[in-house]
Amino acid sequence: MREEASAVAYTFFMDLTGLPNAEMIETGLSNLRSDLESIESLLVMIGAPRLRRIGFDVPPATVDHPEHRLFELLAESGADSAHSRYNALIRALTSFERAAECAIH
Image (cartoon, rainbow, N blue to C red):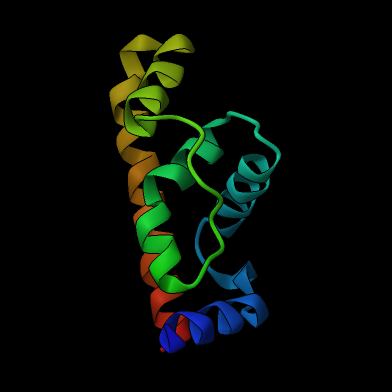
């Protein structure tokens, strides 16, 4: 329990602006807190377990299967490119998570 509290406190003061894709993650967190479904909020829901371990205060998911919903949302705006855009978003999330983990160590 003590480790979680220190991670949250540290993340609270962490400057995210230098991390890759930070704006997208911040938008996703904000949208999730406002119960807004967006590409960014679905991406944050997908990354929630790891983001919480890093120390982010991620609200509970509002969608049962955010991976499926994200793909559906991407397919609505272009079925032919949904798969590649989905993979690019997951890579962007992973890049942010890795950089955030390095920033707190």
